[in-house]
Length: 252
Image (cartoon, rainbow, N blue to C red; front, side, top):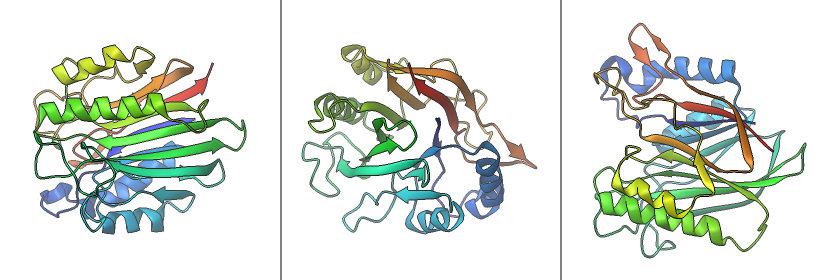
């Protein structure tokens, strides 16, 4: 199974030559060539979600926006129609009241943060697994810590399809040595498949050194055969201000 985490960058048409309208063709060309089975997107605005659904015709694109109207950014999951069956879908807010739409932690930006959870069945192997796709706060360190604890605690306590394995993807807005990432020490069964991949955020090539803030964690039952970052740049135009990260995994 080829899985990608991809912060696609909000389309506010403010990025000059790297505005979304100029990146569209490059994104579609890369996705067609790489042919991933599942893509976990972050920063997907409603009109970009429509564009994804129109153009990724081999995939279902699921998720909703994070604000009071279920608009604004979504952490969308795209999965191949012919490879997987959707058993369950849930979206919860990263807060002390996860079922309250647009709720937030106190130490957080004005942006609500969400996690999209898809329970999928591999139609070939019949195995079930869950994907948790998220985008943590860009300001509140404590909010990021609490959000990770909230997600990981939920991953441990799912009470249906209890044998389904778990995968966590997303833009964590945290470096590997950040204090909030220490929460993973409490959950040793999850490993970062992207640990050695290098930096992922490059701000459209403006940073002298890229920053590692995008991750794919899985339970140890998964074996990873390949990890790569998509560094494509054509005439100064990038896929996004983040490098998408791709892994190829299978159960042991």
